[in-house]
Image (cartoon, rainbow, N blue to C red; front, side):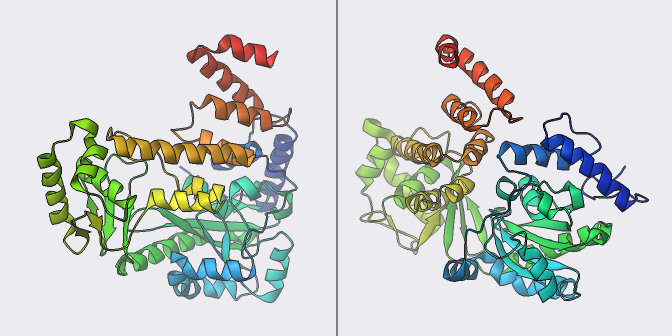
Length: 423
């Protein structure tokens, strides 16, 4: 069985394959369906690109430059493994035929390295540091698609969605935080058609694994809490991951949103409303303090003594800065979704509603599409209506959106009113 992540099977004529896929690409972008004679991973990526309103003649936008770019990449976790990338892939970047590129989890290029002549060629398509190369902004490409499917792969010549990129071939692999599993970015090698071989894919995959191994061997920087999309909190501290029980997870979240501290009675009300038992609350806090240690949890009032960050706080900060796309990318689901503690439920609704409102008001159909593609957004009728309204009349994604609106309207008993609006 052939490897679906490799661009060419053994014995395939590259020139013939370029022509074959190029014809399929032109049929696709002119609205002819279905896609044939193209790898499944590429066909799915083309559909995502078209659904995100990417034009086949578009150019990746530049989002970071100058001081902002320098500050961002200096603070990025992948800066620590840049020497590994250069050691393992630097030979390719120096041979005059290839580029080495590193991007973050949003597809923003952090470093692009190679000889001056190859770099000049890449500049013509904005393959430069600070440019956004995820599928929603640049269409099908190796680093962007590797992030989308979370798997190493190759993208060969005319498999690229953007016509301006189709003279290049690239191989990329995603990189994860070994402590949390969070996607950090991707490592990419870009060059000519000769890159479409098993060795380039194996090389970028090995480089990504080496980077993850190095990051996993480094001491943790501060403590972080993950509660989005999780039933229980995970505390990462000192290079270790600690999973907390339900009540301790709720208590930790409540302490995070009240850095000034809370009394036992206040925490009891946030946990149980009027049914709080002071003895039970103190017992839970005592057990939590034994788990976390007195150096982390103080009492009188109860508060966190050390600097502890959390994924939901990251989403909130990004929204406050107007970085809606980054906030949505950092949001992995509702905060402790099964918790019925009043204080946690209020916080969960607040985070969800702020993010949803920001996505809707952004006017960016790609963000709306991302929301709808997640488990918590697939039944969001209002978001589906906003998505359909933003699509051009000939978009291949419009029939699906209209059908989904009709299904949800029927389920919610709104079929008649929706039909009136459509008429």
